[in-house]
Each structure stands twice: as C-alpha cells, then as structure tokens.
Image (cartoon, rainbow, N blue to C red; front, side, top):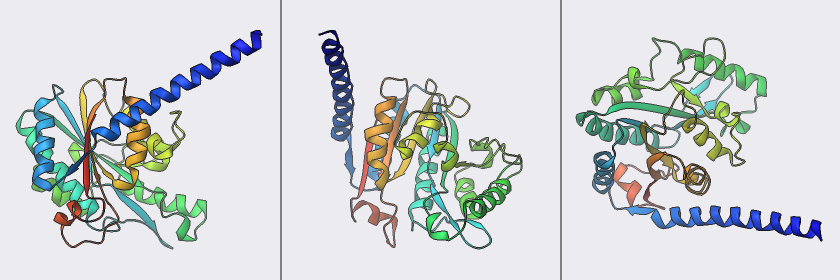
Length: 272
C-alpha cells in the first residue's frame, strides 16, 4: 500500500509539471502576433523599448551559419538569403532608437556552426581546425567583423565595441565576436532541446547577460519558433527575464525585405 501511495504521488507530481509546461506553451502560442510590415514591427519594438524600465538592451540579430570547404570555415552571411543582413539592420534601427533614450546598447552574434557539418565530407578534427582558424581571426581586442556587417553597424553609429564577446575557453579565442552554437550546446544547462539549450545557456550566464538589468530583443529563424517559445521561454518564465522575439523565415528566396511579411509564414512577434 505504501508503494502504491508513493507511485500515486510521483504520478501526480509529473502530471502537475506537464500541466505547468503545457500552460506556458499555450500562453506563448496565444501571445504570438502576426506582423503586417516593417513599420508595424518597428512600432511594436519601439513601444517595448519605451515601456521597459531596464537600462540595458541586447540585440540578437544577424544570425548566420558557417559553411565548410576543403580549406576554410566560411562566414556564410548570404547563405540564408536576405535574412542575416536584414535582421542586423532591424536590430540597428531599434538600437539607435533605444540609444536616443539613453539606453546602453549591446549586440550578440550567434553562429550556427553545426547545421552544414554533415554535408562537408570532413572529419570532426578537420571541421574543428577550420572553426578554430576562423574564431581566432574574429577574436581579440582589435578583431573586426566582416565588412558587410561592419558597414551596417557603422551606419547606425555602432561598432565592434558594442558587441558581447564569448570566451570560448581555447587559446586565442578568449574574446570572440561570435558565440559558437556548438559551445553553447555543450554547456551544463539541463535542457534536452538543443536549440533552446543554446539560447538559455547565453541568457543565464551572468558573464554575458543580466536578466535583472537587461532587455533582450531577438530576431530568430522561424524554424526555431517552437524551440524558443515552447521550451526556452517556458524555462525562463519565472525569472526576471524580459524580451521581445521576432520570428522570420530564414530560408526564403526573395528579392526584397518587404516580402518577408507576405511570403510563406510571414513575420511573427511575441513579447515575454
């Protein structure tokens, strides 16, 4: 009888946990809004900046992958069409507005260094050597972004000085302009969903981000929406974390940024 009671308590505990998670997922689903156009999006993000009491704003935009060839790991900024440069441009527009209100501005660049590994026909050691060479190039006090990205930042009054750098805990890579998703995935954060784990690992690390004092505005590939809304934001829901998320299709072959809002799944937004 005692074992039966214990089993019942365990079952009720796991049911309550699952109901809590499902409730959070439902809340985020109902909060997601479809965005009509860029003006609509910027109005919402400017409003979020205005309404926040936090003095620091961090922008996650310009997300791009690495592509590997026989010699290098390549910063494939155009691999996902207009997505990478457009999301950096959006980040800068909102950052410039936040800066005009006296907010402190930082940018963070997540690099998807795993998605194209399998198609490279390279060994794990060969891939690692190519990544190491690139990340060393983009590390150190005087490290520079690729010119395409530097021009966008500079146009809005920002530079490499505004970028949060990752200590990749490898020689010559202690201050990298890029956050390696492979390294974020290897953190001690206990989340099975790897996409959510990358994201949460950055947010909970006080070396990089302060949940108490910073507001995060993220521009995320639409294919990651479930991972972020259903897992990452649910994990963070009881903390002081505050954020705005914009989901944009990174795989569209389009000729202008306006098409992001009308083609495929469009652009969606959720405020945490």
